[in-house]
Image (tube, rainbow, N blue to C red; front, side, top):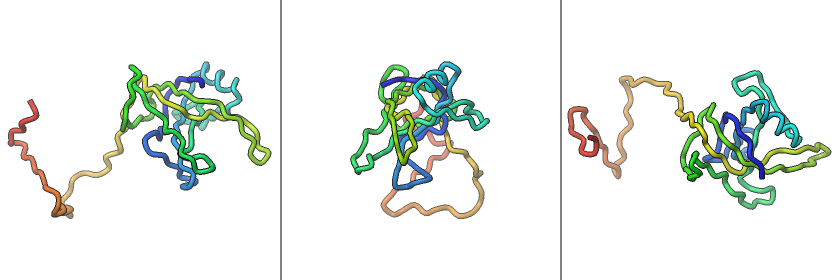
Length: 164
């Protein structure tokens, strides 16, 4: 197992996805590399990409949710700088991370090569991801509260007991 450092882009580590093949879900991230990282990844035979965008030189590191035989693979763990495992953290583009991976050689239909298989991620400096807030409040439809749930409405003038 090896470790490489860089900036994370398009990190999908919480719930596996695959927009190209919904039957082969995977955890993944694009890792932007500095010159030393590029050299290290090339020395292992990995494909370095550059799409002339904010990522610069990068490598895509991923692991599938299941093996080709249907066995569940371990989900990548995410750690903070103190090596404490964290959950439900959305890693935004530009976050500095360390990524552990293992090298996997492949030969598929005569297409030979090597790729890094994602193991775990350590967040060194987090850029929090927040979905874009595209809408403003407006007059119009308001969804009803289901009968089995209670609506909680807090007026700004009300004193909130758990806020100091």
